[in-house]
Length: 238
Image (tube, rainbow, N blue to C red; front, side, top):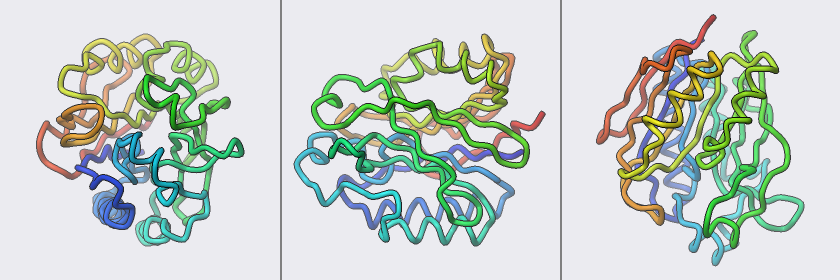
């Protein structure tokens, strides 16, 4: 099972441009053999909580027509995509939501970030359910940025038979998660961990990508580097 960890610099508040970039990356990664493509936290809008809170036009629906290019790309290359954006919840606020679009363009599941951080509490509704989906016999767990600081999420994923843990994040250059969180979640739970992180400046600070993956022993097996948009592939098969 090949998973792609994607990274780019979202244009703040420009859903159409970001959707187009996501759709292009899905097609490119799928053409290189990826069955799942993972994108960073709030890749569809940019990590801009203040802007999202002030502009309801940035709030998406699960079946939003503006996401049609992403569904088309998934169908074209028969790949699933984990795409994160501000998606409305029954509470009336958006969640920080990963929509998992399947290879046929339909929604496999959604995961709303459970553990909000800082200013996110002022804008977003927290989720209550854990994220899971299965593809080609591999069971995947979902987590978003600050979620990864809570070891119980990965522990429950492993106990439920997940083989890979997919993290959509926005990590600035000072963040220690690359050394103290992701490899630990992998090693402690014998999981493949795949991280998608953004590039560029946003409300969280300046981010330098380094999207990639860790093997079940906690060692890095893929690294997209700190500067270039694109993706890196990792084999998470068992």
